[in-house]
Length: 297
Image 1 (cartoon, one colour):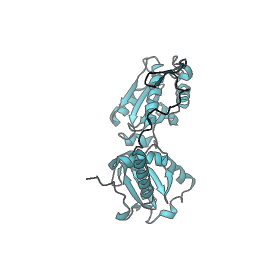
Image 2 (cartoon, rainbow, N blue to C red):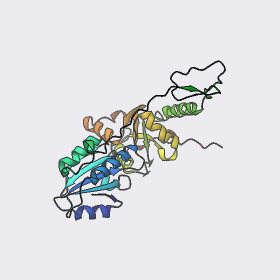
Image 3 (cartoon, rainbow, N blue to C red):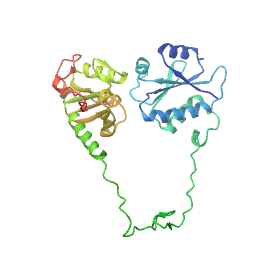
Image 4 (cartoon, rainbow, N blue to C red):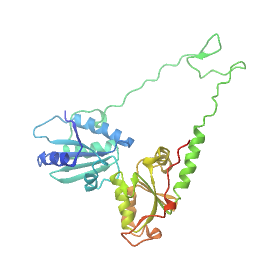
């Protein structure tokens, strides 16, 4: 069966691509270690790869790349979100698939590389069948506790209270949400990114900073790598699993791919927030730079 090659450097990627014959279909998967959907994509690709017998020369080659560790390669394929799949042959991109939809990924691979062997229903591992256990009548123990089927159980007057004390987790979530509501309004345009504008820690954040600078936008930023509460909280708050995330006027705009789409449909999208000549945009005044929460003593 075929396997997935993990590519860890630009030179290794170039060497592998150059080693393929013009007839070999390359299936290139971009991922990040922190994005949960990438785990699903990895399972899908391993399953698909295992269905193709190894041949010499190979008819299909599966590659896996960390999009953030190899930003130049990611940007050359216009990768703006992960997981992201590129299918190419003889140096020509045949199709791109964004997301971890198993059906779309399988269809795209099989459309260009042909079908492999049997990998279960819909080309993926077959679903596990779970049988519901037979219900048992509840029985009463000497101490009044019920076992088996509890659907007919009703507490008696002598039963002890069983409700747990309220956890402080809810209060902590509310505190984080209140803080996030303030952060997204810390500046007219707020960028939640990995790293800082002068030292981005991922290719997507670097690209977003470049767009804001090119459009002359003044913006505030928050380095989500410096605060785990904000990093995890923003995913639920924005209902968006990846970074960077951009807010304008306190409203969520989207990630890098959405911002690009907005600019394609409306080149003046950032016009209300321009405060510098194009190409000279940058960070807002120091007081609008959101800071991580101070560590408690």
